[in-house]
Amino acid sequence: IEIILASMTSIRYTIDMKVTSPAFKNNAKIPKIYSRFGGNQRPPLTISDIPDGTQSLAVVCYSPDAPFIGGFYHWIVWNLPPTTTEIGSDYLPHGAVEGTTTWGKPGWGGPHPAFGTHRYQFFVYALNTALDLPAKTRPKKFSKAIAPHIIERTMLTGKFGALDNLICGNIGGYSHPISFKLIYSYPLLLWVTLYVYIKYVIQFIHQTLSKY
Image (cartoon, rainbow, N blue to C red; front, side, top):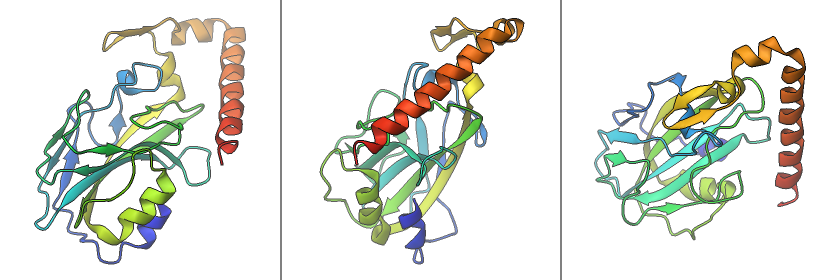
């Protein structure tokens, strides 16, 4: 993202292009079904007012609040046709290519913050060319490739918090056994939960660093 932002001097800032989601409003909470361990479904997106001259679209879901240098990439996809107006939870337009996320795998990897509430920014880029990149391309290489070709971009922001993973009930067909009431009724359970999250973060950092 830093590389992209540094090379955006020719990007149109009128922001005619728009991206929305039928699943959540801008700056609102992302439903749990789209989180990493709440179903890991990809949020549906709707794109409108794509500028003239667009040859392809690219979409990035990026969290600037993750405790990693350069943030956290949850989804990278490019070579979407310029006629794309909808991206469903279970399908992608023909020709679309997904890159490797910070999770270490291609495809959607939903939110799973270890603490606090994080922002998840869905960037849509209108490009003046299709990208000649292999599948599983990593974020840094993708950012360098996309930067000179951006005509316009737009953004949708969703939010998801660590405690959202603990909400009990059926959300999109997925139920979680832990509730706020249970946690606050038993302080020991709260500490155990925090310990599990901290342990998870340490393991994830170690696994991520070992890949580079």
